[in-house]
Length: 347
Image 1 (cartoon, rainbow, N blue to C red):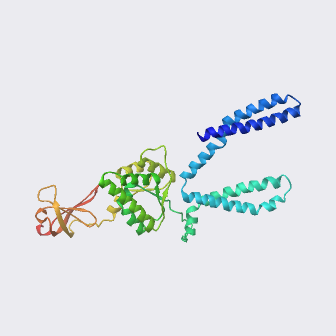
Image 2: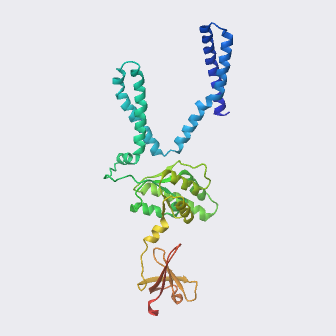
Image 3: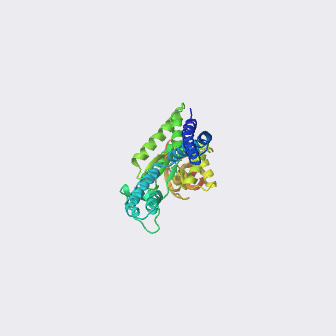
């Protein structure tokens, strides 16, 4: 039995009784038929209760519950604190307002409670980042131009990748990191996959989240924010980023392009890694360990510590050994940077 149906039945009986009482009193005052007035108002009350009760009780409460569930915990806490502070201020001015002549002494206290409660909620939610930073003991050095940085949304791929934990410890990300519930659910599904590789990736993602919450200098929160009109996690994330006006941290190439097309700022971990790799110019020498054959005859392939591939011409005879090479060319691709070199003794 639904809540709407129950509220309709209860509302029908309550308003029917109220309509009956009103009809009897009106009939007595007008000296008309008590039966006619009572029956008419009772039926009107029952009809009004049957139709209007869900719109006055159940549905507003359902809408309020959904709003509260989607609201970030920090924002909800800030709104409650602002409401309490506003009501405290309103209560302090209630006594002098009650000394005014009627009807001002009855109307103004109620209006002041509504006004200061609204102002308290508005101020606390608008400055929540700074207020909670102060409560956590981090008082920022403010200037006229200082503004709190918006939070960032973490994608599934960047959590499973794991490098975000090390990046957050360095201080490059200096804002709150949000993980929507649907991203956490996607990682849990990956962790429960029958495929061992996917299962290990999912478990790694859960471990990275725990590590972020324990070690990051800035808070990492799981937020109950959803986008019901979108189906895929990527679409939900992009729409949510637009609503919150915050960037997405990812290393997913497709999500990166889709988000940029929709005007969403993207912080790509792969682009950051490419930007901080060691720069080698043609003619410079370095030592590299040749581990495998290349695609072309006589090529050998090695890797630097940061993962940069080095293709060594005439390097096939040196597979399994470490040699000194001289850089001949550098190629930047979508997958990263590739260095071409030749053994120093062949130049």
